[in-house]
Image 1 (cartoon, helix red, strand yellow):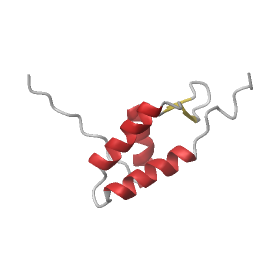
Image 2 (cartoon, helix red, strand yellow):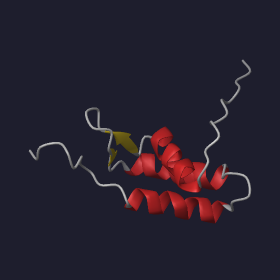
Image 3 (cartoon, one colour):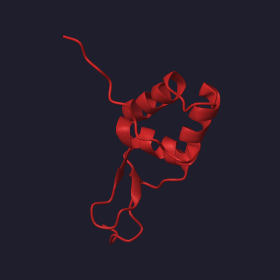
Image 4 (cartoon, helix red, strand yellow):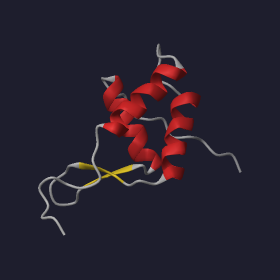
Length: 87
């Protein structure tokens, strides 16, 4: 069976692209109540995000620069929502 790959939507910034890649890989998710991005701390999802960054970077961006942006975005996201009450 012939499978076609869905093209990612156009993203205006490299940071937005990296955020979309991390979501697609399952490395981050959005707080269902407040919308803040949260790190899922899943090493396999992170690895998938880096594979996507190296294998399919945005036009005009080197694979290393794309992977560096993914890492930068990942490092800027916490593992809990700042608006949710602490457990």
